[in-house]
Length: 219
Ligand code: AMP
Picture 1 (tube, helix red, strand yellow):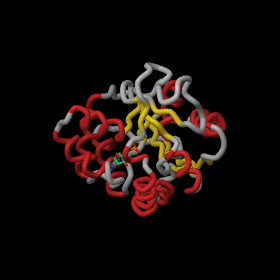
Picture 2 (tube, rainbow, N blue to C red; picture 1 turned 135 degrees about the vertical axis):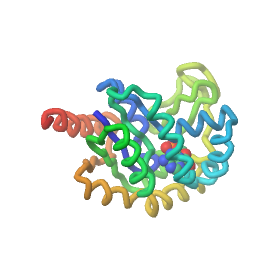
Picture 3 (spheres, rainbow, N blue to C red; picture 1 turned 135 degrees about the horizontal axis):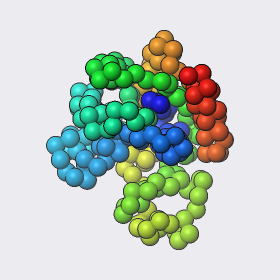
Picture 4 (spheres, helix red, strand yellow; picture 1 turned 180 degrees about the horizontal axis):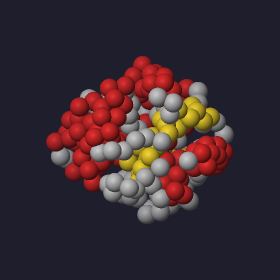
C-alpha cells in the first residue's frame, strides 16, 4: 500500500500515520521529521529549512523534492509507505508523480483528514514535544504523569516555535492557499478519500481504517 496522508496542521496526520504504519507494516515518511533531524544535525538542508520552519513558511519545493528523492532511494521498493506532510503544494505533487513513475511505482490513495480552524488552533497550541526523545504529546488528550516531563524518558517537554499561536495562524493560512488545492488535484486523479478529523484519536483511526480496508477489499 502506498499512501499519502493530507490535512491541515494539527489535524493529527502524524499520529494517524504512525498507527497505520504499525497496523499495515508501512514505512512512515514525514518531511517535517526529516527537516527536524536535518536541523539537529546542522547540515545544509537543516540550515535552509530552519529559516522557513520557524516562521511557519513552507520550505521551497526543490529542496523538499530533492530530499524526498533521496529518501525514496533508501526505502525497499516493495515495502508500502505513507507520506505525512508531503506533498504540500501542487508542484510538489506533480514532482512526486514523476519521481515514483520513474521507479515504476504508483499511489493507491490520498487520505485527506479535515477539520475546522478553531479545533486546529486549540490542538496545536496544546502540543508539547520532548526535548530528549522527540515524542509529541497533546495536553488535550493526555496529561503527563509529572508536570512538564515526558512519560517515556522524563525529558523536559517544550512548545515548538512553530506550535506558538502567531506561527500557527500563519501555517493555517499557508495551508489554505498552498496545500488545499491538492484536494482538487487528487480528486481529479481519482485518488482522494476524505475523512473527518473530528472526535477522539480512536474515532479518526476507525474511520481511516474503514477506508483502507475497503481499499484492500477492492484490490
Ligand atoms: P510538519 O511537522 O509536517 O507540520 O512540518 C513542520 C514544518 O516543516 C512545516 O511547517 C514546514 O515549514 C516544513 N515542511 C514539512 N514538510 C514540508 C513540505 N512538504 N513542503 C514544505 N515545507 C515542509
